[in-house]
Image 1 (cartoon, rainbow, N blue to C red):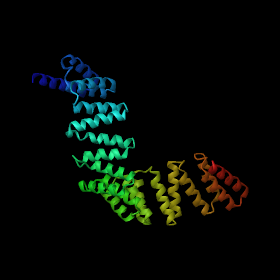
Image 2: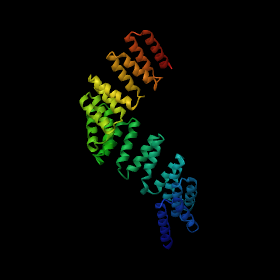
Image 3: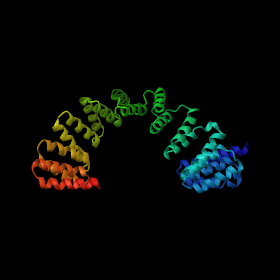
Length: 344
């Protein structure tokens, strides 16, 4: 009992040193106590953790392996060894250690989240699902339902993806991340009305959610609700005045309702922010071409070539404009260049 109290005091002193931004001093202090606690797993585990925090995984493994020799079925040690192998990018050994820790102590179910995340990151989706479902046996965590839904979607299992999103929404009906994920799912299914409904919920929960406003505008645009789309994209550029895509979609919607002046204005704003934005250059040049402003259109495309000299669309459009303006020789030259780039 006295040894336990002494160890608690030592760990407390170590934590005080760490709080003073003296991690190396904390490690040195612990190692001076090593002769007394060299066969105490709790001490060795803590020392191993600190070495890992200090970016010294080899020393961490040295102490953790010694701890495992003393007590070979210690879940805490195995968890720490898993963390160390993860740091070393040894995914296989990290997973083996973490899984064994979970098997030894079911109270450490949070480790399944680390296992699932690692499987997900390396593209082992079925194993990731299995690990996350193990976690959900103990705790219905909203974020786990969300990532499981994402993985099922990537695997093409829309039904299970949807089931997990619905479970997440039941846990927290006002969670903007989940609402946005559901809205995105509806958007991908071309169910624009339901997508709009969910994106509107997102913007009500958080009026500064840039992605929520952008996706709301996109859903309105795809649903041919132009006025509402303009309102949503205007909110995007209000929140983020340098949002190129916001201005681009504003320009596209204005063009679709034949408000050419506003369309040009917003395309120009795109190019002010990002002169290399080729879609804005091509769209703006096309509008000037339609207005018979050939010189302006060609000048825009010449400028676009500085950033996108290998984009065949520039030369194709230049040729089309030159044909329309009567300059057939230059048109042929640019069409030939476009053809060569496409073949390449």
